[in-house]
Image 1 (cartoon, rainbow, N blue to C red):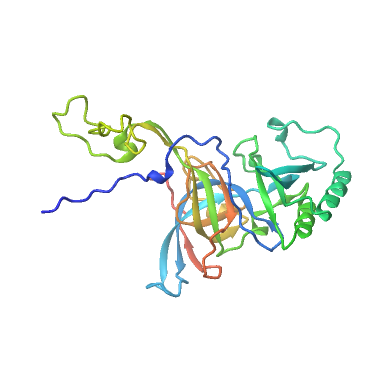
Image 2 (image 1 turned 180 degrees about the horizontal axis):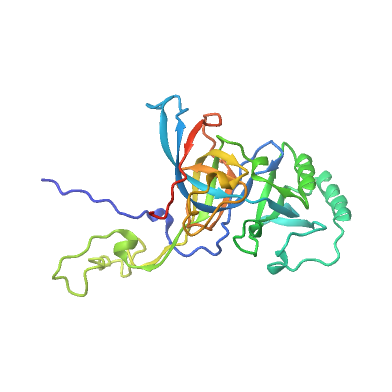
Length: 333
């Protein structure tokens, strides 16, 4: 009989598997949309439940039938836009051309930023408008912060940067000006049935051995030196251990992107989807929320960045018909 092929249990595409630099994910690319508005928003992972919905996929074998779908609940309290940042093209990529902060700031923002005592955004906005008209600006982004104290999660906000959509630079600048110093809700950015990308830091599992980290085979009982290790570190030459050899190291707490996750529902009353006894390691939902089909990276309470889909599928987004949302206790009672 031919030898059975046993593929590697871990993908080398993610190497080196090191800890993420920050719990706030770093986004390297954004979609280019002509609709004015933010291209993403931040929220907090709550937990999972399941819903019953009418399958609206035309090519599905269960089209028109009621199906059970696992969903992840993400609570998204209103984010505050406290700054506007302009970028120009430099020798090594985008460089900051100017920054404008709002007159007012949300609560607890001074915990992580040194806020200006005297600030005149109106004058700076006029100067920024001239730079935009002269074509000295290539991209406009806004500085946002979450307000987790509104949902009694914690006090310190999380800061992130989001580009602004628009057909041209002037339209983007005008949209950013309107948002400066104001709150933005998730219902103003996304709608039910839309596909989005979820970017977050996965669960951290610490330092793990090669068996758990890469799924290598446990060696026979009589193996010298231990069983939960690799059988060989490689050939005699090259006279070094190659990077592709499974070894112990950091497992988890890596940044990952889930593409084309569908929003099944957007709500404003978190009590209508709070399960009995509250969600494990989170509690009740009290603010705006999303129901996203499937799972997303990270544990509960982890900050997640929700981005407009950069690989938008051909199917046009339509709000699904949800007939039932499971509110049974997740505490095994």
